[in-house]
Length: 324
Image (cartoon, rainbow, N blue to C red):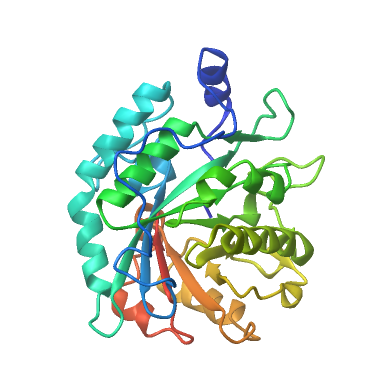
């Protein structure tokens, strides 16, 4: 459940020179792409435990990897800006948050199941205004995606591209990122909260996705992995209400995707545990995994952040732990 703070101010920024075009190819990452998953192997789950950190430098409130402020400080002023300003903010954020991120990863690292760091970049952001095409979403600039991909490779992490499609179709937004998804260390996440219908507005209306649309995406991504001879990829689908994924049991498994149902949503540990218990029943198909999302600011404001010990005590045990 990402905060939608990509509002009218960002629309003004685009009009003054910012770009919202779809990626047409990776720029010039400094670090060479790995041939396998960082740390070795062609699959992530169940061998590894993913510990991911979300955000976007358009606004610090979108998550930790775009927040250049030390923990506990006001991040309300760190927003907007052109590409160069956002690149500077992204670089500062990863520097300021580095110790916090690494310590969080270490808390989940076990000899029998090593932790794998992930950066989750919101690559398509929902807006409360339609912009020029009327689809209520912004596609992130290639320079920003390239930056996070390069940083992920420097830190032996993977990059997860997260999609908040607004009124667009998930598959169209996924295809716009194809050049990145052809990379061996780039995975995908879908955020149905921000997938709204005609006449609805992200943030004002709670979005949803049907299993048929998820199946379109999973087939496309699975076929891409096979065609490009890539390591298996994560396909993460966020959910915090039953209505957010309709006909969920009809989602198809794919032999080269590791499908993760991420239990999203802000709240106290008790509320988050209850939501997790509710949405993990009935169980999905054998071999699918679960995740849980934690919000450093919002969860702490509601009560307190769940500890790794509390999270690892959940059943079924989450394989993916996402922090925003």
